[in-house]
Image (tube, rainbow, N blue to C red):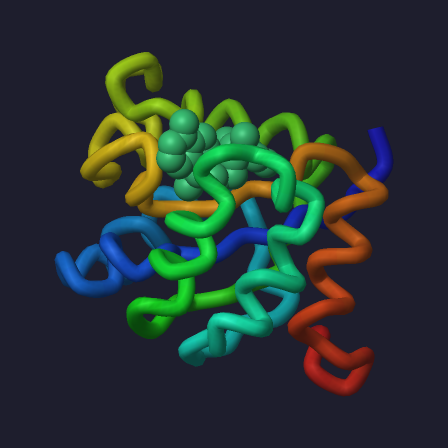
Length: 139
Ligand code: IDP
Ligand code: MG
C-alpha cells in the first residue's frame, strides 16, 4: 500500500496529564513519520468547525467545550496504510473498550476525554490536515 497520511490531535486531557512525550513515543514506535506538528489552543468556533460532522450528535456541545478547554498538539503523520494503522494504534473511542497497549487504553480518561484524535478515512485525513497546516508547514 502506498505511503499516505493521517491526522491526529493530542487532546487537552493528555496534554494536561503531561503525556505528550509518551504519546509521541508510541507514534514513533508505531512506525509513523511526523510530517507536520503544532501546539495550539482551539477557540470554541474552531473546535465547532472541526467537529461540524458531529453537530447532530448529543455530545457535540460537550465535545466542542472540551476540545477548546486547553492546548492540544496537532500533527500530520505518514506511513503505509496510515489511517487504519493509526486507528489500530489508538484503540476504540471508549477507552474501556480499547485494546490493551493502545494509546487510548494507556492514556485516555473517558469516552470524551480520550487522549487522541485519529482520522477515519483518507478523505477526512486530507480535510483535517488542511484545516491546521499549509503546504509550507509540511515536511
Ligand atoms: P473517534 O474519535 O474514535 O473517531 P467519533 O465517534 O468520531 O470517535 O467521536 C469524536 C469524538 O467525540 C470522540 O473521540 C470523543 O472525544 C467524543 N465522543 C464520542 N462519543 C462520545 C460520547 O458518547 N460521549 C461524549 N463524547 C463522545
Ligand atoms: Mg471520528
